[in-house]
Length: 513
Image 1 (tube, rainbow, N blue to C red):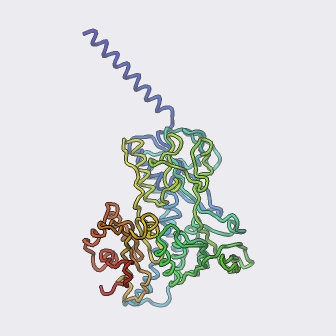
Image 2 (cartoon, rainbow, N blue to C red):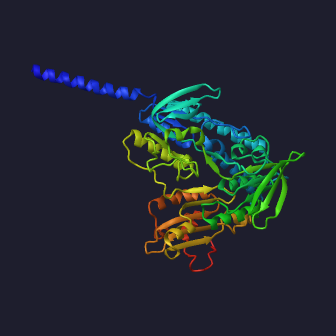
Image 3 (cartoon, rainbow, N blue to C red):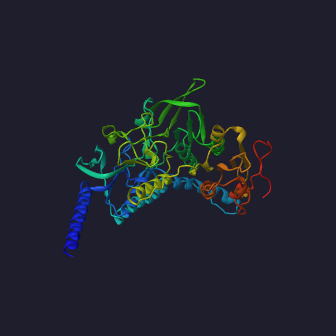
């Protein structure tokens, strides 16, 4: 019995030593997880880690734009991206609906005009409420929020500096980089930075931008140009090469065709060469046509640069700690599990090489990373078939491969494209032009005809695409689509009725209801 008691005491001492060692290991660091960047992905990751019982902190610090614009917690999406963009897009749609209303019997007295300051104030107030909401959520989940700018000191330490210059060093067992990106300015165009704005500024303007030149043809460029035209501003878009690079080009050109028919001007195959401030206060922009070499000039109230985004990596001191970065893109190179080249350091969202620059994928990736780190999960983020929508005046939603990419990967002879031009019921009484309302589904040509991509131009494209994305994620085939009963009368039901192939050469215009 004495021997048994002695053995029990030995076990207790061993267990106490083991627990003490674990506590010491944990006590080596201030936090189990430190997230640099308070955007969608970083916030999602931090909150999920806190739910796993871990000690977590988020560093977020917004460097003002060249024009001095800054904002609160929440990242690009909340402050200068998805949220204000969609609200201003909706404002433009309401203007169109007011014009349609007269055809539906509404008596609209006199001229109606748009007031930018009323809209912008309302949008900014809502954004500020989201900033506060994010801070409340972090507090409720015991995540420490620090309004500090983070720079790596070593692979477990971050030097955090306040706006006043006060410096603190924070340590963490795991660190996640989620700093996102910021708009680029062309360095070779005199006056571009001095006189131009970006999407970082547009949504926080107190006064109307007036006559606007949008330089670029990305989704940011076309969305901004679309809603500015929709609120009846004079808008021109300067395009160097193609619209919506990376998207299906047939769909992209239908988007720009619709914009042109609704008042947006396009300067195709042109590049800006100079921006100057005139005595009147307007900006004289000079450009060159790439094919003819001819020079053009015009005066604008605002020049909006939308020529791409650059990842926020330069100030992080990544080279010192050995985190590999793609020298061409500036993005952090990551593995499938979001790990960088340095153990215990991860990168998610727009900052990570090869990841889609989309809020929902960053949120999901952040949550999954936290579960892998702290909840014994092995699930990886699936980046295949991530749906998205471009909120131009005629919205464009897509999921999966473009027609060009499907042909490139599998060969034209192995691809079948079902398509249709259709007229939304809402466009009939109001006599709206529907020539760019178009759907196509890209499939394998074999007997199973698995769907590789779905593309939809029309009203409420985001809602339509989100619904079909579940089926495509589950491996939907053309026969599944044909066995689906549509909801009548809707635009989405036209997808369930696609029966004409591009290969057939037949007229794909839908007739009847």
